[in-house]
Length: 169
Image (cartoon, rainbow, N blue to C red; front, side, top):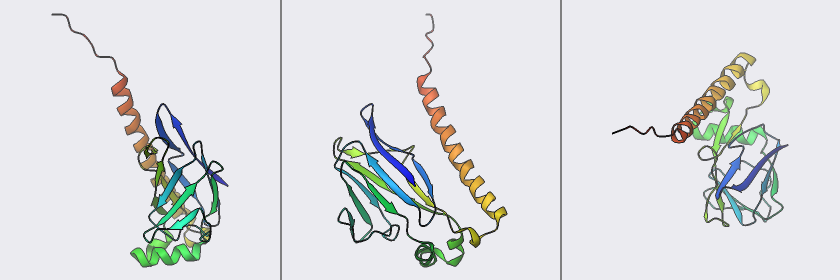
């Protein structure tokens, strides 16, 4: 089971982890520090629990209305996701991990929570759909992209934290 925490730190609402790697059939728990949090996924077919009262179909995606207890959902099984991937961009893409950006609105701060940027959920394809060499290449590519983004974010923070040198006149 994977856990996504949504909390306030220093007056800013945050999502941790900002990038979540899950497998089809795996459970994801969204935990919130403040009730009144809503999560919006632009894709409707990500989760199995379509009949839940806290999970609503907006016609253009899925909205999760989280109370203080949070919510646990199951990532839809691969055949459904594979069909969705085939419809979107061809059958070859069904063998690659799918990236699903989502938004988290927090009513307590009247703003959107952030990860490093907008949070994402990456759903891996099932094991037999690609060779282990391809899997290593894909995951190392994702890891490299995440490392590059982390280094960029860290460099921006370091530059902002450097003291300004005063020159003598």
